[in-house]
Length: 297
Image (cartoon, rainbow, N blue to C red; front, side, top):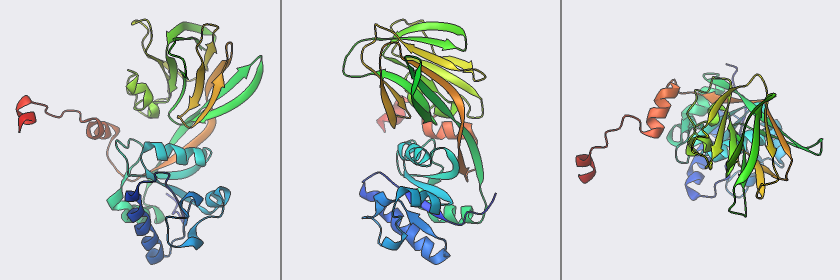
């Protein structure tokens, strides 16, 4: 791959355990001579003010690749910060599961050195595009790497959402809401709602009802060669549409949400050679022996 000549570092977690990693990145930048710029949100947490970008736009322009310090939530925030422009993003795992973050905190210097030398791979992930239609007019467009979901808020009532795949009516879900996820997002909210895990290089939509009233309404894997359309009906409680849990818009009865794979994308930097299934075994403890005798030790 092409060498990366500058890095931008972002972290939104206020926890103090990130500060030593910030200091180590600054030390690496000085010793390697590689320009490293810090997002304005980190201005009070780094000791070299000259390396702090004045604005978010400056930060993106100065950064050949963006380094996300945190968990999957911070990584998704970094993706949205880059506006799905294709700018390479690498995640340093400072959180919990870390499905999207490839680098361990203790190996950040080695990772930056390898990326600066071009010793890395990128995974190209397409983003979902959700167009909100109201009264026949487009009122909002959202993008998401993991999922677009509709969920209730304020009122503990079932929602009523019609689901279509292209011109084909699927059903009217009576549930807390509905998730449309990408394969890379199948290990996020959709998994918690009972959806299956899909290998990331599969091009598909994953449609998962949230707490459906009928036990027979199950998650669906749909081809991505056409759109998914969700229609809010009169029986709805108050509902909200969210993209990766980061951008949202309140919906009204009869609003329509058209979900497609847009032209937006992101390039995720990968250094590890482990397979996706190895990642699942590590993160989800697959194959672990949970014998009662082990618990008593």
